[in-house]
Amino acid sequence: MTLALDTNILIGIEKQKKEIIESLENIIKNDQVPACIPFIVYFEFIQGFRVKSQKNAEKSKSFIEKFRCLNTTKETAKILDEIKHKYEKIGKGFTLSDLLIASQCIENNLTLVTTDKQFSEIEELKKIIL
Image (cartoon, rainbow, N blue to C red):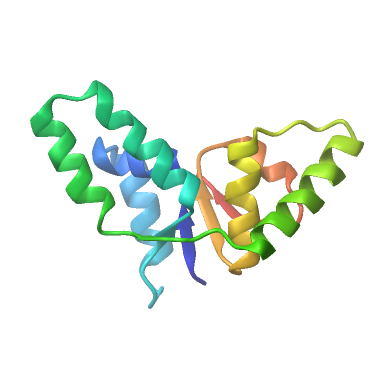
């Protein structure tokens, strides 16, 4: 199982939240492939640099660059269109960011690790919700 990490997981790791780190260690102990991050997760994380001191921003930049960032493709757009239409049709609203994360995970056959319970409603998505 290859993992994709959501923004809330990266923030939990960075803030050294024990419960997130321990849960993630248990999940990845048998995983041979390093976890990656969807494009929009990279974007959301670097947005936080603006409110940090220069020292902390540099530390965060060093941290985020350790992860492989997924690129968007035409297939990402097709999946995004399909799931956005499907869930809007049944009255379930998701942010475009969450749908993009889900689309990239579906496209790349990844399991999303998140604390966001709303992802549980996206049937096509493999996920682990902490």
